[in-house]
Length: 487
Image (tube, rainbow, N blue to C red):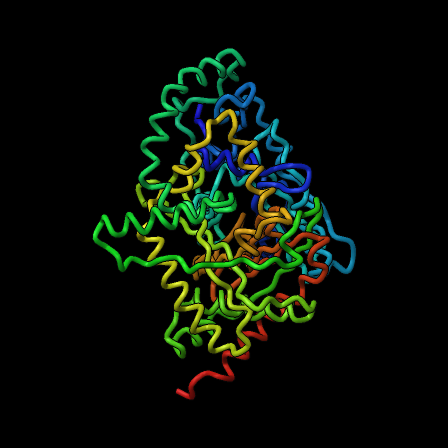
């Protein structure tokens, strides 16, 4: 048995009839390199079945503690059914990108079955260009971005030849019994004395950083955190440590309560063009990606006559996983806020300001405790945790308050060489991420083999036109290219 951390449990707590806690990816494969020139559901089942012993999270099943008295546990599923998790479907003719995106949006809106391991894979055929798509979703309570990449790395190969993997150890322990309710309650009772100790250990690191957490939506919490942070800086003798900008988050049409339905769009950017801009303006690739996202979102806001005078605030997920924590799965992340300069018309000035603010954000990140989100969660007894987590999301959409963040922008560096699945070459991998109440738009980019694959997921009722955002990302690159220095 393996108990979830408070941060893992938070992704379960946010789920309701309208919002889900899973992340996903849409992979496009050229099956021409695969044996027989095709990639089928049977091929994928064979591959996963052969490597399942290397991927323990795929067998984990959730076990709740009665009455929510403690955080849930993962146990190996004694009734694991690979056929349930790997499925197939086909697009009707002509099988174009918009049909594929609509199908993915519908699949992504469906919650995962908590009675089984929390993942599903769909092999999608019928694409117009003869390629095959594989849509994979897995719950955020199981993985974060880095641990998800570890799972993907186990399934993919560096060449079209499917590599041999060592068989499972004959002494390897298989799935055991599922614990009963009495046993789970007993475990929760034994853990109760540890709760006050966790709170005391968390106070010195969590309170001065409250404004960086989801609890800053509680009236007065952000101000308390900022004041204690200033005191801490003076006591520590480091008054010049980077301070978060005083961000006032405006409300937009994608910052209300989301519906159960989604829209999805995807596209590719040329990584060499982005790197050339990085060199021309002496910034980073991430600066360029965030700045062009700001340009695209600014254009969307102008088109809908709702451009705020102040910048939006974007949530930027940052991994704090160390090399020693590789293979531990679960979540080791921070959620940082940064201004998104949609209020700046000049693309060069927008990039410059983005560079400055993301540098400050990196400095804040280095000064913050890696376990901040878990430390803050320790203030809430496990029995009240789910209710408290949902209450903070409601605060973000209340008419009296402002959302903590407007949207999510994430840029994930990926491998710059081809990968293969059952012999089929990976052409692109588009992220399909999470939206929540108060944050109904998510733009996630992932670089791979010379290009940047972008996935835009949004609430269906709040954002009716997501494909234009993909097109405008390329336009934002062109704007910066035209204004770049001649050298």
